[in-house]
Length: 115
Image 1 (tube, rainbow, N blue to C red):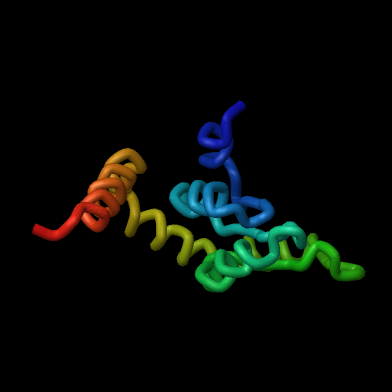
Image 2 (image 1 turned 90 degrees about the vertical axis):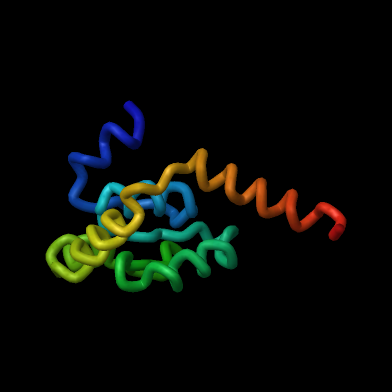
């Protein structure tokens, strides 16, 4: 079963904090519990910082990490769900193909010599 079919039924998403999964969760208006992969700590640190109001982050390598409490806080505190909904509403018209086409056009324009 694909993620897009499961997300509408979820209360929250638990993931390692990749940009793709985090974006999919937030576009589905789901708050996120981030369990970043220590091997990828630098890129995912940027994700955690940008999403602090919409996500709850735990360091999985931390001794005695309380995953149940973190997930409970994420789903019980209305602020996370509200911020996830606001994100989804703000980007509801986002079309990946159109965004990629715009980026490609801007890169091509930047690479072309000035006339």
